[in-house]
Length: 338
Image (cartoon, rainbow, N blue to C red):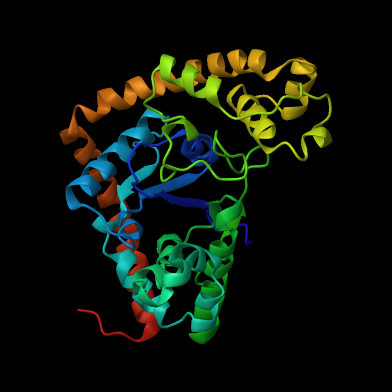
C-alpha cells in the first residue's frame, strides 16, 4: 500500500440484542485498541440486520443497546466515528453500484449465504444473497484501508478486494479504491460456546448457559462458568495436548485473553489443576472485566436521548466523508450530478 494513503479502519456489528463475551473479546476489545493508533469508523449494521425478519420496536432497542455496549467497552465517540448504518444513505447507494460491478459467480461462492439459507435457499430474500456487496460498500464508501476480521469474515473481505479491483479496472480509475487489508487478532479469533467448544458463541443459541452476556452480574457469570462444559482430564502443560479438547481450549483461551496473557503462560501457571479449580480463577477474571462494563451499559441505556445524540453526531461525520467519496464515484461512472 502506498505510504501516502492515510490508514482508515472500518468495521460493523449487527444489532442483535445483548452483546456477549464473544462480541467483546472477538471484536470490540480490538476496536478499542485500534482507535488509539488509527482513524476508526464503526457502525451498527442495521441494514444487514433486516436480511432476517425483525420486530421494528425490538430492532430500534437493539441499535441503542449495541451503541451503549460499544461505549461501555471503551469506544470513544469523540475519537472514533460511531453511527448506525441506515442513517447514511451512501451505504445502500454504493451497494447498488456494486451489485452492477460484482458477479453472480462471486455470490454463488459465498459460504455464509449457503449456511444461513440452508436447504430453503429458493425462498431466501435477495438481500441475504447480495449482502456481501453491501458489506463491500460499507468498507469502500470510506476508502477504508484496514478491516478487523475474524476467521468467518475473511471471504467477505476477499470479495471486497475483488470488487474494488474490478471497479478500478472497469472504469480506468487506477488506485481509486484501496484494497483493504485484514487485521486479524493473533491471540483470539473466536470465542466458542460454553456448551459446545466447536460452535461459535452466539445469541441465537437457545441456552443462556452457552454464553456470558455483558450485562450478566457476578453471580450469573460464576454460575455459567461452573456449568460450562469441560472434560475430566487436568490442565496439560503443552498447547498440543489441547488439540482434541475444544471445551478445555476455549476456557483457557478466554482466561488468557481476559487476563492479557497467553495460553502458554496460562498452561504454565495452571498445569495439573482440575477444571473445577481453574473455573474459580476464570470466574474471578471475568467478573472483574465484565461487571464494570455491564454496569456502564445499564447507565447508558437509561438515557436514550444521549445515545441517539451520539449516533446523530456520528452519522453527520460519516455522511460528510460518504458524500465526498460518492461524488467522485458518480463522476467516474458518468452520472450527471446537480
